[in-house]
Length: 68
Image (cartoon, rainbow, N blue to C red; front, side, top):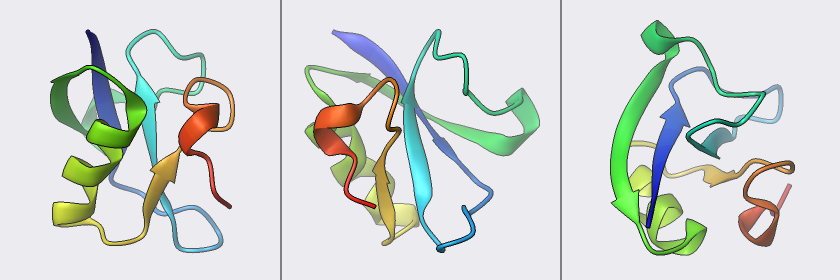
């Protein structure tokens, strides 16, 4: 399992991106919430949606969950 984070700052389209630990686009510590360990990005995005209904995966590290 891998560790995931959600960006607390929304993208221009209003989405909050979910990133895997180690992603080169991982937001700074002060701009992310630790989502914990998940078996896949789908599980991590579901958890992120509890706080941010408009969450999706990072194009680079969670492409399978990238929707916009």
